[in-house]
Length: 430
Image (cartoon, rainbow, N blue to C red; front, side, top):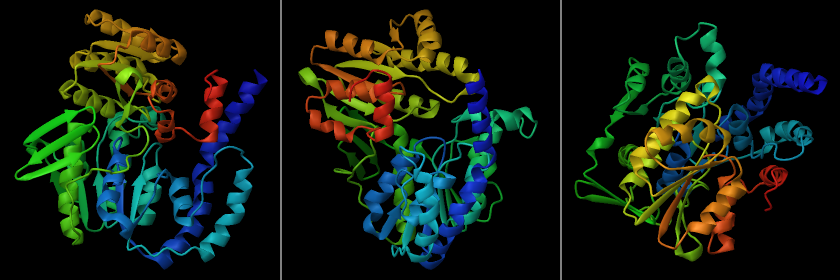
């Protein structure tokens, strides 16, 4: 009991001084940014930010520096300074505190563009970065109830009427601090209202203008007019937003646009295609799961040309008081996909999603143990299945055990030391 109270106090202190500590690193990162003076392109939203950043890298190439694996108040400063965050020992904070002033004086960057991913996972996170970076261009890819638990307090205090308003207001700090162009989803009323009257030019993007969308386990083609956009891995139809943004943005930047995304290095756990044991096709979207990305990815699976479709779905975390309703809603999205088999992994999907699926007439196996899920899959696969993974609960470990080529494991998410330690704690060998 005493230990729990102590840990609770530490967590409270960390939240209280989060931005105070982040401002220390921002102070030195400002030195680098002032010398560098790049044209800043910000990517923000509840889900899909990393995919957008990856596609920007495919188009802009070495003309830009990209904030890979860094989108928080701390992470962006670390990225500009050339530091890696705390991964492993907390003693690393001492090194970071000492290194920041040195790198603030010495770090030199020369790329003309800085493409930065910005999250809004807590109140004031996006605001903290927006008021500092003041991007030339902002791409607002999505809006939804991601990290909802972090915003419950400000809603309960009466600062916002509901979670949607609170989260939208946080992300809206980016467009409000943008100087030239802001790209939004034309179908989003929240985005449209939040960007009304801002000084930057708002460009609404209509994803529905895509003429044709064809997806297989190992490829995707989008057609618009006389242009075909090709990927050598599966992508959801919602990626049409990214494509239209890129077409317009590259014209604005006076850079060439390439509609062929073959060979694009996608971030781990974002719709990667792998060959699995017995000839199965594996689609790895195990990095995370928000309801937005779940809906988009399950729509992709519904439309996919594949013989047998299996879904392995993990929990959606950080939903706070909404987790029950959100996981029941997840069941409806799964049922609409009409899968051949469903495997649920996690406490929330077992408690909320499985019973709702049963009511909808969809059979599902539910467990909180990734090892049991793996055993179930290995026993029943025949070789003609496309197995889709989405969500938390160490699904990347299950995928690793199903790979035809073990060397492909290096392309999975959560390969760092801390993640391996967490899996080991669960009894999952590396």
